[in-house]
Amino acid sequence: MFRNTLVRMTGLTLAVAAAITIPSMSSAHHSFAMFDASKQKTISGTVSKFRFSNPHVYIVIDVAEKPGAAPTSYLFEGPTPAILGRLGWNRTILKPGDKVKMQFHPMRDGKPGGNALRLWLPSGKMISLENEDIKY
Image 1 (tube, rainbow, N blue to C red):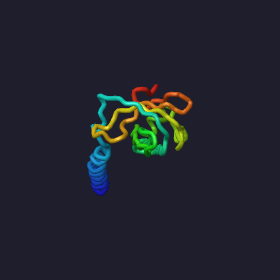
Image 2: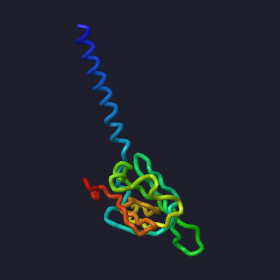
Image 3: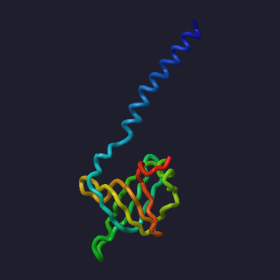
Image 4: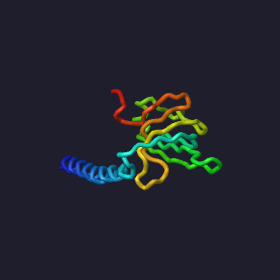
């Protein structure tokens, strides 16, 4: 009898834990509706920040849009470090001061930045940030 009660309690505990965990995991991830996937833009500038950590990689590129004016900081979001690792990325691939070019889907609200698609390193080599470019 004790064993049946223990098995039922364990099953109930697991069911409650799953019911609590699964919805919170799905609500933690945001939509990509803030990006306009029907448009692509390209900018050139200088990396000021690079964060290679979960849940998404972030890159800030400063762009001199008008001579003599302060640069505009563009914030780009990419996929997870695990996905980018399969595309050849690592935490040392970019550093502040690197001159790069970024292709991206812009923000719908017009703010500087967007969903990163491709990045050209100072060497001229293009590296992808798109899931569909992963070679399995």
